Image 1 (tube, one colour):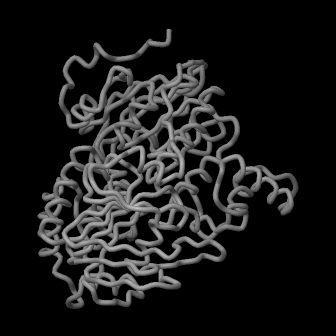
Image 2 (image 1 turned 180 degrees about the horizontal axis):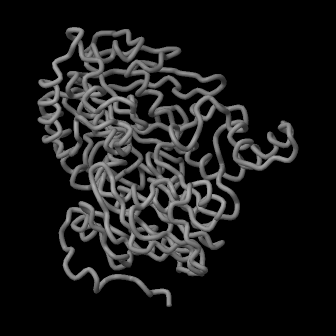
Length: 502
């Protein structure tokens, strides 16, 4: 199906999120849509998928003008969108979310739906229990569920907004192979991403937006440097690994055992020192999220102990509030669901996060504080901006800005999920500043390059097993990918990094 945008314009107050955008996407192609955070990519895709109405302009499908006023209209026309933050109902089961929107009788045929769900899941090598509750899934698994649902609903134009942020390398390869096959069968794929290597690997063409305007397009062979300059209007240089400066012990996990709904972990040992960065790698659902949350008191271990500080203060069984009081903070992957509060402004978030003197809120002081944090973290927003109106990159910056100044340990799920190169460098720059001041960081990422670039040591999770800490400098993407897939686990003890800082 051919998709054409003619003069699409969308404003949010004085902000022109889309400014007179026109281009054509031929059928049977995979089109990459690139741009910095806030460039207008998601807004344009939400107009195509019926979540927003444009202020001006028209959309044509196969040369015919269409009116898309709601997501239901888009689905009826064969347009489906996988959002960066999955749109689902966590209290319901996977299969109930899967059949939402399917037309038919009052009582759907669940048995038939389960069979079709499992067949689709097998095609993508996704491992999701149709009877599991959505609130038990990781962000990546929820993305996988939405991909399957859209295909099942008959989408012929498939919009994917950062679809690879929560899936493993083998799953990404399977997804890309399937997308190429779907394009060969006549489907139109719009692939929104900040990862240039993914666009270059997958797409037939790259379209670039910047500050709401269409900057240009590029066909293969792609010029990475030129694409970066089109996206940001300047050259962007990636950071290199800084020399590690290690301090005293911050966290000591001793023989930690955890039990989940689908996986158990036994005997994890990890000693974390001030200033270092530990990366946790593995396929979605391999246990890394469970371990990270245990290090914050959000999940309780069934064996072993968690101790903080050089004096090994036992925190086993304590709540997150107790961990927070001792300088441990947790940043979840689900920004709007767990880290921030929809409906509240930036200023209201800072009021809640800071200890304000007096019984009443000092609005003037609160506004000054918010402006200081907005400037310090380069957040594109105002004190009265609703948090959900910010782009993903600015929401992530806001989360960082809400952290207390002096922390011993920061635990982060997917710190740069859905962020462009410049925002990724910025976020890690802020995190590394904290490392320089003695804060340790443990983070999860499905981006193997990110794990290797920013970690000092790496733990790999696979089917309930956990490697000893491995030196990141001695790993590469291929080796890390094999470990994540359960291969090359022999003789890992010889590579363990228990006392490299002695």
